[in-house]
Length: 449
Image (cartoon, rainbow, N blue to C red):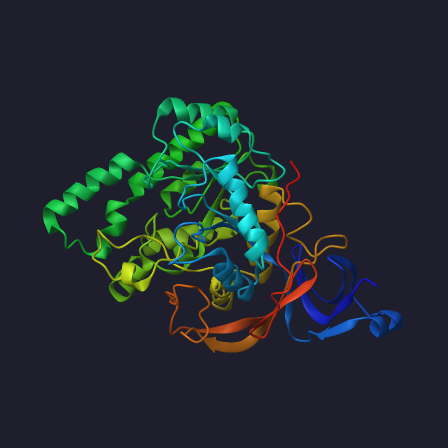
């Protein structure tokens, strides 16, 4: 018989509505939503998860993570980071191609899918990376099986900086699927770096990071990407916006799911600002850089008025040994996927964003914008990727509960209010109050394109 699980008497947050409800899971799917009483035959034939006082939400979909496998597994791997994601309520992730080797061919892409099928507790998809000379590989990509093409229009490692104008035009003209772009202008960054090296030598303060990877570098590159997308009617998605000025490039006049040009903001750009460099140093060194309080406030404002479409993490772990280097040698990026919803919930508790809006930006719109098949909502017939969250449970981030392989967090020592207690993936209870069920793995995401 197909197993039945009843999540009983939760506060359901879904599709802009909060209501008391119970949800029946049968096999992989949500089979019934009961806004009122549950029939006796369902009660008697189901395993009951008592959820009174807890929030029941769709599993979060993170469209931008770096899980470092293959080739960089001293920092992280698909197994460790997917577990951390699950503990944070992230049931599906889309992972980036700047691994070793870089994921720039169909063969290398499928190798990552194979690794995930054996290791990942969460559902998964992987971007194929663009280079100046792999258009043939990009064109082969199946839009129904791959989340998108990742394009670096700013500095990157190896061959993944795409700076040839002819290559850029061809990618935007011929891409068979969504192009997700990292936008920072390389020449601007190089020029700024030389100026600060002349002033400080090798001892550049990390507080100079947002001046080196500046507002101008971000805006110039984002504006160019938007220009190309409009020229070719491309499906463009700009990642990790960080400046108020970039908001002038986007519209909120049509629903996000109907836009040809979409975007995201990451939790660290909504939480930190340049005042935090003194306290946290390289731990909050990201690309694009965390910028001013004004930028942070305008990003939140744009999120609320739907100029910004999605909230993600850009989860990108490095070891503390690497991070504790000088500014010029310390890598950019940090671990976030376990704590992303908690960060957003803290902003809710501060009165800055509603719970329904968070779910829209972390669940519904990632599914709509990427056209993920039957995920991102709690609906009858959809996959049962759901999360229970105790909004009153307090906990402090520390070494004993950090699940990232790198074993640190920029939130270490912070006390959050609210905690994920249960995470279901494809109907399987894979996480419950700190314990994992690793007997069943996540599955490859499919896309309705």
